Length: 241
Ligand SMILES: [Zn+2]
View 1 (spheres, rainbow, N blue to C red):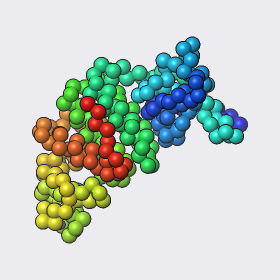
View 2: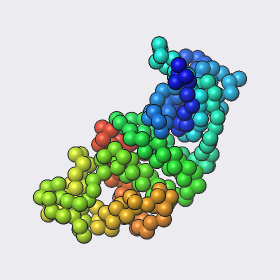
View 3: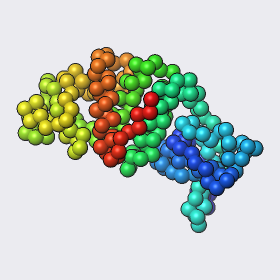
View 4: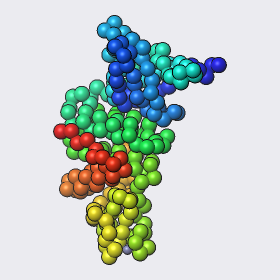
């Protein structure tokens, strides 16, 4: 019966009150994907969990699974990363909150999502405004790749022509890419933008933030990624500030 108790490293995506004194946590883990946990008494001022178990933190928890109620109760918790730097800048905080919100609502998550969010939160703590936009582009496009939504920019989905060396017309619903002649998508990616996405896809997340690109392309690539995920979720991604 030892599997009823286990340790998990989790990222806290959301917390919510359960009754008057308990706290529910919606978390993302590498091993079990998203999961709802409950921290008994965590809303009480005297609880050690109260200040510890808050959104966007990475914690190691000891969990007891009650098979009758099919609930997961947190017995112990240890802080691994508070991501304190997010609190120092509203844009960082809003971006991180948006990523957590997105991961809560993506229909099915692949195992790489945990590492992607974990690394993105870590990097977001110390980045400039411009790097934050790059990080957000990478987060959204990499998550699209994880979820099988990212086009390969190889062949036109209309006529089959090779897309090498040309701008690309991009449709987010359904996800498809077209050559300039078919041009059936709502968005147009310049050759430089296609090259940027293709080149950065094989870099580490941290290295990808250094890749050369133009400022106007960054806003454009981010807007496209927002639109892609808004179409997938059937509602706008929150933009906050
Ligand atoms: Zn075509």
